[in-house]
Length: 514
Image 1 (cartoon, rainbow, N blue to C red):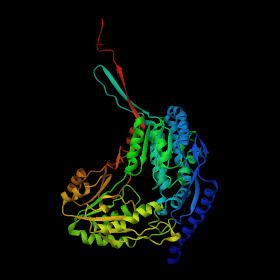
Image 2: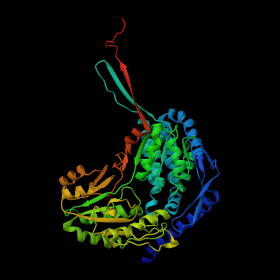
Image 3: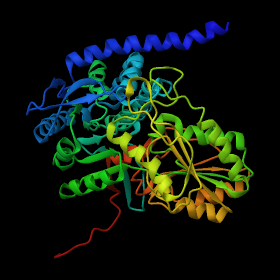
Image 4: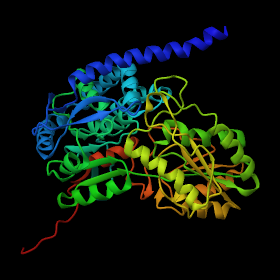
């Protein structure tokens, strides 16, 4: 029985590798092009760039490198398609978007494998990426029929009726961590609202972004409703944020890029929605259920290679339990399995790119220079294929003034900071430029609610890890973002609110010159 159980993961690993090899052979032969007005096209300039796998640094494909000319073609296609997509009966739009979800689910295995090879994320997490992408389309599809709903605001002599209309063609710029799911998280509500989209995916993870528009066409989404242009931020990204036909920009990424996008969109008065960085605290009080807190702490920083904006990268733990709890964390960190992302047993795969790998590795020395202790990890890892692997890292003996407590590492890297009492925990938690999420573990619900009220963060979880609920608002404060995603909040961004005033004929109209 032990042999049979042990062979199942190994067999699955072999299956994953063989299927991935077939997909990659086709990808390399075909290359990755833009998708404009329903057609796959090369760059106007003819330029390309290589995309590589973090597993072994091998070239996956040649990718079309877009610039202003390609963005203009895509924006023109989105503008042309907008009128009919906006006017489509919401029930029909709902049916098409449900078909998109069906098509995504039919391709979920291939999406997961391509995402693993392209980003280095472990298969145990990416196996759910397509499912979550399909959920995004289903959720917003069901709300397409109510997207225009408003309010009746009556006075004695008038009714004021509000409604919403789609803002127009929008730009969506998505990041390289969990790229398929995050692309659908932005694109699905835009399409449900009646907008058309020009999508600029991250240059480090173009593979599933090349697949998505083809899946939408297969599902019956009209040509020009979703257009994709690959390339670099300084070329296609900048052109997208500056294009006059694009009415809004939804962006997920780092805070400095968000600032640049805001400046680039200012001359055309672009509406912007930003989901940016985080240096999120998880606060563990001494009365918490420490076993559950330990599981949540480990999961929220070491899952997805730590490359997630909502990761709890600062562990604030009460002094009375700090030493014992930190030791338990260190013990677990040392047992985490680093390995090939297609191996079902792997918990941490390679980091996505040489530049990001160098950044994360630099914080090993920064911790020591700051005077903190590297209690686990703190070194590159000799992983299979010679890719961008690092050891999951735990830093103790830190203060909140240290760089490892203030700067977003965006990797499997946790910094522990002790605190005395509730007031100091809140002060430390808020003493950063970011404000995306916060996590609080305590048996005292009164204290939990007080801390939640005081934390400068857009999302708080009490006695829980990050659990996604699509109707709820998702977004941050301070340098962590502008605006909210999720539920009706997404429609507030992708739509304009109009007020229509209806007179009852009973009020006196002012007379001039009578």
